[in-house]
Amino acid sequence: MPKLELHNLNKTYNPQVIPVKDVSVGVDEGEFLTLLGPSGCGKSTLLRLIAGLEQPTRGKVVLSGRDVTKVRPGDRNIAMVFQSYALYPHMTVYENIAAGLKLRKISTEEIRQRVQEVVGKLGLEHLMDRKPGQMSGGQRQRVALGRALVRKPDVFLLDEPLSNLDALLREQVRADLKQLFATQKAPVVYVTHDQTEAMTLSTKVAVLFEGDVQQLDEPQRIYTQPANQFVAGFVGSPQMNLLTLSCQGNHALLGEFKISLPNLAQVPPQIVLGIRPEDVSFAKPEDQQTIQGRIFLVENLGMQNLISVRVKGSDSITIRALLPLNLTWSEEEVTLAIPPQSIHWFDVKTGDRIANRPD
Ligand SMILES: Nc1ncnc2c1ncn2[C@@H]1O[C@H](COP(=O)(O)OP(=O)(O)OP(=O)(O)O)[C@@H](O)[C@H]1O
Ligand SMILES: [Mg+2]
Image (cartoon, rainbow, N blue to C red):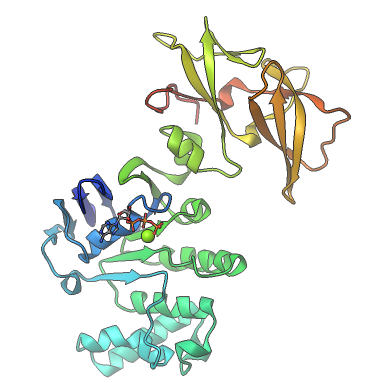
């Protein structure tokens, strides 16, 4: 039985706002579940439902086999870390981390031991006597994490804990987080709209859109087998090329070129072709499926060039390809390979994935 279970959780504020729709997920010990989705999709609301800071309209939260839906937040043994740190400004690092334990009437000696252990893990030993106002954002975030870790909770809930940090620090604390939680047994539910955090930290990712779980899967499968067009477009940077194409016989028409369709019971009038920019390359003689077009934009991303190509035979279809910097071209007219095994197909109406690619 998973440590944390969400059963058909719903939250409605009014008929127009349904931030959480029928969410059912289990999170085991040792698992790191990330709730990933755009702003306003219901991530924080879902986390607050787990913490007990909000009551669901329907459904239940089960922790260690016990229905805690009606249990007060303070009695759930959950530790939550917010984006805003929420430290006590007048207390030192030591006091901030120890505060939650003091409320629980734990002996001074045990508190000291537990704080020392956590402070060691977080590299905060030399800052024990500082107050939050005397520390950097990254250090404050570590203290907030320390306060959660010292509690030894049944589950950790983290709501965008890195979003106040600058890009470099975020990368560093992200790596620290990964190492820290690898040694924790309690499951983690982590909220972010940052796909890199979701990909690097998680054992499981739930992609949310308008309160609905679009896909619940291992991070790699979210990337290689997106369940629908939303997930395909949300995860991956640069974004996947997503093109709505007309079908003719067993082909989709991409400009003046024919792209073979997968085996379908019935060929629809239109279909969505998805291909990631890194899967498009300059064509080699042995490539079977190629298209031609004109380069109209080159963006140097540092490690690679992102080129935008207007496909021949169309004045609106653009394909973007991610190419090594050392790959040069002599003319604007280029031939690109569109490998059949790299294509994702989606239904135009529902947005659902049509055929599976090999993993
Ligand atoms: N107390 C409330 N009353 C009414 N609507 C609310 C309330 N709290 C949140 N909402 C709405 O519920 C939806 C989901 O909000 P939520 O805060 O869960 O989004 P989020 O995914 O965490 O977004 P962000 O990434 O911006 O933090 C939003 O449309 C929001 O406006
Ligand atoms: Mg939020």
